[in-house]
Image (cartoon, rainbow, N blue to C red):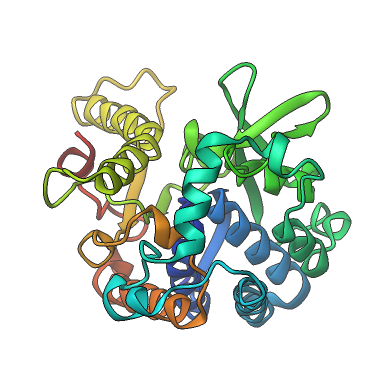
Length: 335
């Protein structure tokens, strides 16, 4: 029996390799149909590659293109100084806290803006996207509905780019960290990373698809195991809170609607949703901001395998509930 879902992909740099593993496993489930996908930052990258892969080669094409994207991203970093040190490899578990290049970059970007140190606005990820995706062809796809979120710098509002307006610039706008890259300008407006206003946004899937079931792939831990005390821990926690805040607010609104429906207060305009979540909080809580720019292949593979395992567990446990009930307790998780 076929089941239909929408997927919302959170951003988080190289932690998006976890999402890669999840998507790979979901694509292998032939009875699972994906109507729409919405992504932010690394989630936007995965969503775009997923959509184009499905368009060109179906499920197998999407699986192969996702691996190609992450492999090429890893190969690029091998050419840079931004590598895990031997201490990172022994004790960091994916973090780059002992990498001289990372420490230098961290301090340098606090003193200088990308308008100073990267005036040509060089971003190899854009070159990689344009190498792998024919955006003119992608805009024609009927294989899946694609939504990508960016933040309008001037208005502080989330901007959702739909399939028919998808470009490499739109995806790069969604992944534009302002301390590393210039704001991406599209049609006279400037955009930063979508994570500031929607990480990921759920409303495009509610408004523009027919599917009741939304599966959230979350890679930024909400809860902290302990109070941060060091400078690095404090920065990590600030990053996690800020990039989860918009999702927290949106999920609370969804929970409010669910409560109204449960109480029989539907005005005829409210739509019930079944919310699901794949969320590796315990396994990824030890990873900090520095690991989000680590594309060492072994690290990416470990995240991919974790994603596959979590997706497999979710399918075995909750597949039968798709279309019938939520499997994510929004009250416990987001309230």
